[in-house]
Amino acid sequence: MELFEFIVTQEDSKTRIDQYLTARVPYSRSRIQQLIVEGYVLLNDEETKSNAKVKAGDEIVVDVPEAVSIELKPVDLSLDIVYEDSDIIVINKPKGMIVHPGAGTVEPTLVEGLLYHCKDLSGINGALRPGIVHRIDKDTSGLLVAAKNDQAHQALSAQLSSKTMKRSYLGIVHGVIEPDVATIDAPIGRDTRDRQKMMVTDVNARSAITHFRVLERFKEYTYVEFELQTGRTHQIRVHMQYIKHPLVGDPKYSLRNTPDTQGQMLHAYKLVLIHPKTHQEMTFTCKVPLIFENTLTDLRNRGDLFERKE
Image (cartoon, rainbow, N blue to C red; front, side):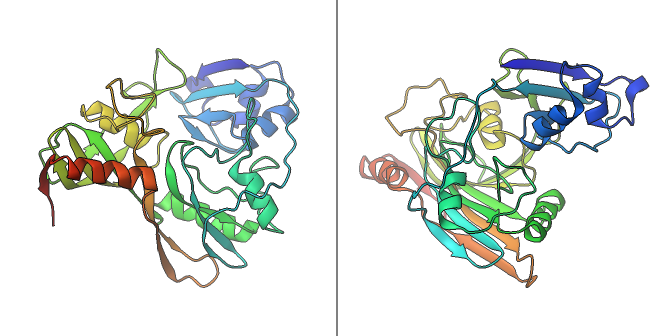
């Protein structure tokens, strides 16, 4: 795997990103465009398009995967389908499932489950990510919407950009959070010491805003509801580490000892969107997974409940 990083100068401002990279990395323009489509090129820590114009100060990261052949095959994963029609499908993704394949991925992904279940998926995001509009981490469970055609995909992507699509999460964090409600407004960029992680920083960062509300307080933990105003990589996990209340079980951002929770205690429980064809607002919810509920039950049964909010 090769990693290239660039900071755009004023001289190169307003240049298409594919042209900018063609002059700087040892790959053809068509290969660069393919990498962009497949999500291996990040512009200020976000996926981009080949015709995007760069500006002075922009950070570009090109993470070229190893030259391995990835063949998507439909796999019956018995997906938990919350809703489906001819335009969209909403899935409750289990913890541990990767959304789409990449270099080194060996286990079946959500995309392969979708290919087994659906005859058609949008092709906007390329051959390896058909239908995928947004992602959630491998070890985060919960709701995710996929598009069955390009028109639906474009409409849903526009909602993400305009922040009219609402995504709410439930999480268990370390420590007792004092305010009942609060907003974390802290920019997020790539960790300068570990390229696989993100951090709160003012260097080559993007605005990141997380709203949260306390649901229950325990002696050493807090049960919290989160709502994303922005959608940066690892946003909730990074923000909670930043305020010194990391997610229980988070392998990247929490160094505290926790019981075996099989990953971080974070669940995307609510999704609100405008249907791309009917233009009606739709709200989807799903319960937390069993291991999440068992963790809460254990905390309550141990007499650790400090305060439950109404």
